[in-house]
Image (cartoon, rainbow, N blue to C red; front, side, top):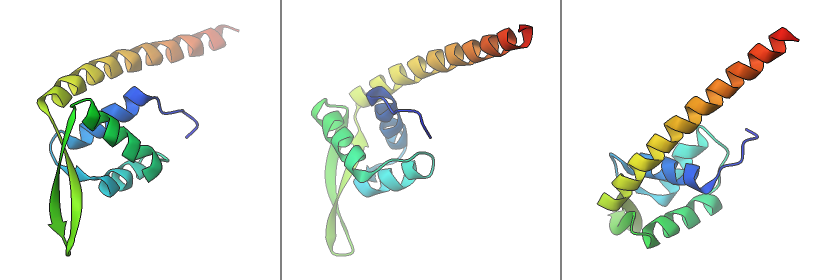
Length: 109
């Protein structure tokens, strides 16, 4: 995939993954790798920033004798997710319109 991932798109992805289920850092990477090339070194700074901004909360849970740091979305995070989803839909519609329009212009040439 040649598209660069902007900060707000990564935020949208992370917040969306937390909408219905708390997750730990590694699980974000594995889930996102299924649809886009991304590394843990990209995800963890996003998680820290969203936590600092009050959009995520954390807690520890034991798993096989080790603590895992889980992330959960806050109410402020849910509000931000709604805004990102609205912005994404507007962007997606505008991009689709542009691509259709550009395709129609090519047909006229």
